[in-house]
Image 1 (cartoon, helix red, strand yellow):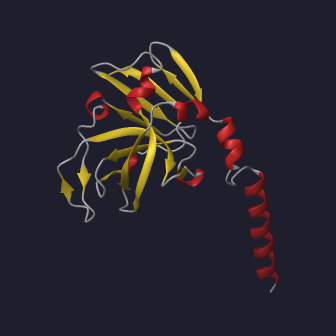
Image 2: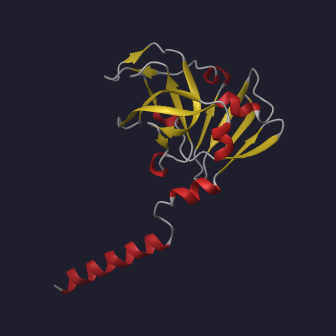
Length: 186
């Protein structure tokens, strides 16, 4: 009985420590208000979520699968084409890459073919590889008509979208909590 009581007390203390250390989900309003995206190319530009939402938007279907086989989606995704964002800092040319990163250190690199919607492996809903339809890489801020939730990578994350539903892409490229995009030589 004494051992059981100690285990309960230890579990309660660990839970309180986790909450005190910031392991809880941030409040959506504060996160959106404080979010900034740094775009670095030939120049550097920092934009807010409000400024991102004011850029020309793209809507498409997004659906991805993780390396463990978990599926996420299908979603209706709205955001800004990565090439449009790169244009804020001087644009992206042939042979260049977009390095997309998040505050947790996660990084994904898109080459110029991928920025043009090519060179992605795509699957159908049975996870059988299919020829890739035209795709676009967007910085998504809205999912299924609502602001992107924090747990899904909000306020902004990468999504690879198609004009047709049911096209699945690899989830590794769907960077969550994006806060930096750098344009570099390939």
